Structure formats: C-alpha cells, structure tokens
Amino acid sequence: MKNILKDLDKAFENKVRLGVMSALVVNDHLDFNNLKELLDVTDGNLASHLKALEKNEYISVKKEFINRKPNTKYKATMAGKKAFMKHIKAIEQLLK
Image (tube, rainbow, N blue to C red; front, side, top):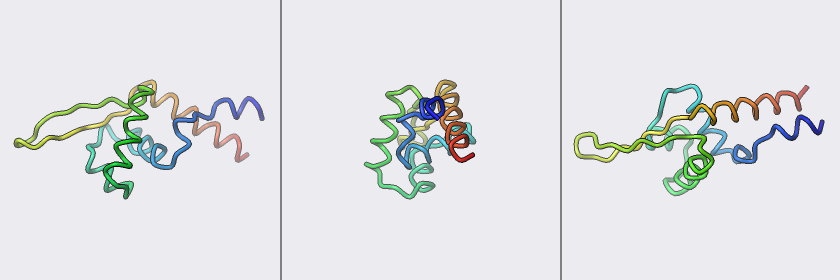
C-alpha cells in the first residue's frame, strides 16, 4: 500500500486540476475559454489552477492574438503526461 500512495501526485488532488490534465492529455491543446466551459469553473478559479500546473511544469502556455483578441492555449508537457498517468495508475491500484 505504501508504494501505491507514493505515486499519488499532490498536484492532481484538486478536481479542477484533475479535470484540466484529463482534458489536455486527450487533446493536443485547449484554450482558456474551452477549458473554462468544459470544467464549468470561473475565470479566477481556473487561472489559479492553471498557474499551479504551469509552476510544476505539467502544462505549457502559448499566448497569441487571433483577430486582435488575445488567446491563451494550454498543452500538457511530456513530464505532465507522465506524472498524470502515474497518478491515475496509482488510483487504479488503490481500487483493486
């Protein structure tokens, strides 16, 4: 049991962060508004969780302008994907 618990990543304990990573692992990238709509969260709530994932280097951020409007895209990094899959596998092991 101890070995399983060590593989749980504190960065994914929050349901918003878990949702963000779930969405980004199965999509090449998503922009802020798509994530906000998908997860049904406020701007501030989403922004704080995205910042935490970015700080851990689990997601990367690309800012650009589309028709003079700012657009921020998020993508799971390779390190983020590996950490997330390790976390999910640990949860699966706990359920067995």
